[in-house]
Length: 126
Image (cartoon, rainbow, N blue to C red; front, side, top):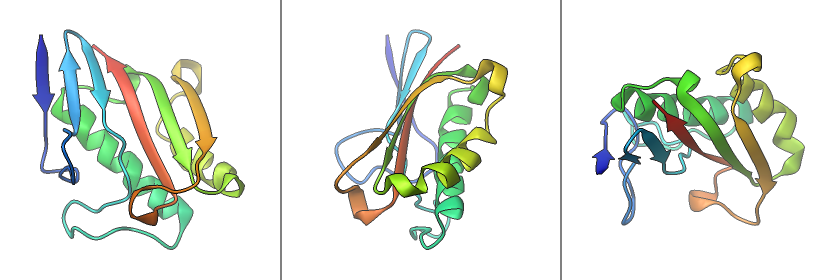
């Protein structure tokens, strides 16, 4: 059974998609970028602050599905510049326990929506 997950604590979709979809006990999040859901503004300028906003947006989506980062089994990280990897990884890693961290891929892409520097999506299970 498919259930749409939404929260006002994360940015509203800007296209024909939802923040997340729950299928049985698996949650699939859409990619999050550094929109501040309260101000509606992008958080850019410092890659660590930008990544923190992305992770907080994902935290809000997970919470709307009654999950936490402990439920995450897979992440996909898309970055505009691989030179930002270490800084992104430092912030990203602070949200997980190393012993139970999810599987992940990180890829550099040519361009991201709104010309942001990082976008992250997740798969979580109950």
